[in-house]
Image 1 (cartoon, rainbow, N blue to C red):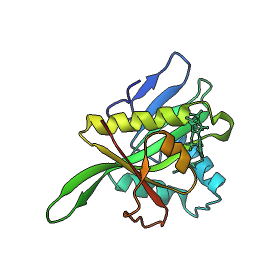
Image 2: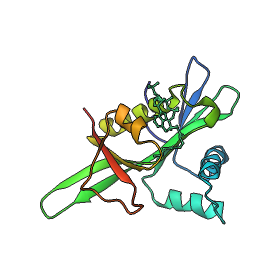
Image 3: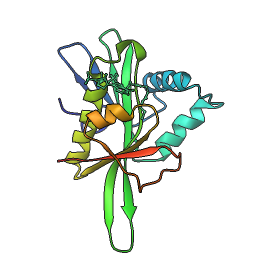
Length: 166
Ligand SMILES: CC(C)(COP(=O)(O)OP(=O)(O)OC[C@H]1O[C@@H](n2cnc3c(N)ncnc32)[C@H](O)[C@@H]1OP(=O)(O)O)[C@@H](O)C(=O)NCCC(=O)NCCS
């Protein structure tokens, strides 16, 4: 499996599902999946259009959206490169920003597959560290090779996890 490289390109699989690379977050097919995710979290958004336009304005944001053969949303992973710098060091990491698989298809391997595709995408871009925060699925990430980074703080206060990508 390889993530499509640019634009809103798609990859179709023999299993019937489709992976689509999203860079315009106002696209209804992405917006619908994202709204399901926030509904599950109980997060209300007064102006969805504004939120999706903000995602676009962040520039380097990308998402991989997976849909079933019948068009239903399976899930998505949204990520962007993020640079950590000091006067001496610099590293660009791959930041997994939002990640969701529809409840009725959880446990079927889609989450692991989407995460793996995002990591492979980072590695192809010369990014060797994946970073994220989570308060919902730490064990999912541990199983996928992530370790908690206790000295690293995130603005949302959640635990930070990192993985070195080979
Ligand atoms: C986390 C999430 C994306 C995983 O998607 P998924 O399709 O269920 O994942 P997979 O089927 O690939 O699961 C892989 C493994 O992780 C385990 N797992 C899945 N979700 C888990 C969780 N929340 N906590 C611990 N383990 C989890 C599965 O049991 C499976 O274990 P196995 O390899 O021993 O069989 C999905 O549970 C989800 O959308 N959760 C709600 C939103 C969320 O928490 N997003 C992450 C924000 S940081």
